[in-house]
Figure 1 (cartoon, one colour):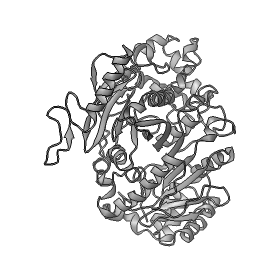
Figure 2 (tube, helix red, strand yellow; figure 1 turned 180 degrees about the horizontal axis):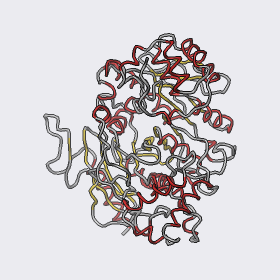
Figure 3 (cartoon, rainbow, N blue to C red; figure 1 turned 180 degrees about the vertical axis):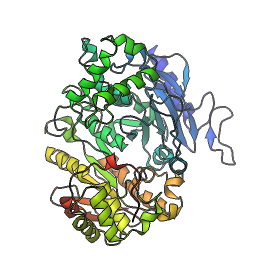
Figure 4 (cartoon, one colour; figure 1 turned 90 degrees about the vertical axis):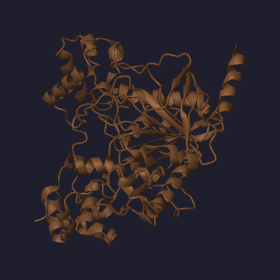
Length: 550
């Protein structure tokens, strides 16, 4: 039986190669899509899946890596999906994790710029997508993308820039993107309950990510990937997830390189705060966890968030984020243990120069004077040494306008530098630091290097996500540099490549930073002086309309 099974799989692999199923051979006129009964059929440990071939990339969407998380599985560690008979279609994205979705498209300009992609919401949300040049047994580097949205929202294809086909095709890699539990479903800390099965309930959302990595380890070879060369990458909340995952003992051997964009972390949330919220949630049902598990997800979502608001969330993101429980995640600094598996994982960190692009929808700020910029930073952002700090940034970035200096200050690299310092001190593997500074010619040049804008450049999607880039040759040239660095890093743990100047590994003394632009350049510690003059502040707390210039 085993021999027959292997012969069948080999036959499936042969049929997928070349898009040559009956009636599905590419036509002479350049047929782009191949889909049919014997096209792109690939084996997983749970059953066969069928995708399609588009522009020479095999695409598989919505593959389950875990069982549904509702009912008795709510708050519990991820469970394996049930095996299936026959061939399971994998041609469209799986369900998104439950989250707030009312008025998500309410801002007309932001909707145009980001045009969020959301589909059905369900607790049957443990699914992933795979883009590969071919399911041919070749050992290609694998990239696993962890979406942004903090720990509360988002999905594996939230933006068009998340598409993996272009990087898979041009870089000869396998691209995987993942959905997982979020917010109250991923991070309700009910560890104060009597049931020991709930001991890790505050971290099941990141445990899902490790379950996805285990699926990659066990299955990606069938898709042409190398389970021994896996890079995890995420942006914003996804960048923090990357740091969480490499710190988790359970990820040892599953992750070999890591990239965090505009998000990072050196520790998880205080379990005292998370368990207080969890205890208050339990109190609403007199400790009967089954009642919480049997509620419709919308009802539990409302209840948990209401209770968290009453209890107070402290410094936690909405009260629901990964918890420093000492089991799933370390109770202290993620990188304190020099013998941890994370010490072997090279880390690349990148932020953007204008995370919030304050003048994009406030054109008055574009013409703000240096004097008014000082007043705005001092009064609105609580910086008594605003003038000295802005002058320090002006010295480092002499071509920047006052509004761009404000953007640099609010983008505030203090946290990413702290993460780089901590990982460097751990030893064992290098850290690399970058700053994305390309300004696409959109919105009168006011779009700048905003939060999320760099994603399309890393993944060669500048002609796909044109509302972030404008499309065309110039952003494509920036993308050529960044994607080449990413591919080099995936293969070797070192981002140096022919397309860029020499990129030294990070040291706290020099803080070498690759600045991505039309002509990328290496600069040491460009904002060190400015940061030394600034009072600590959380720029994310300032994500609101900027005050108008007087």
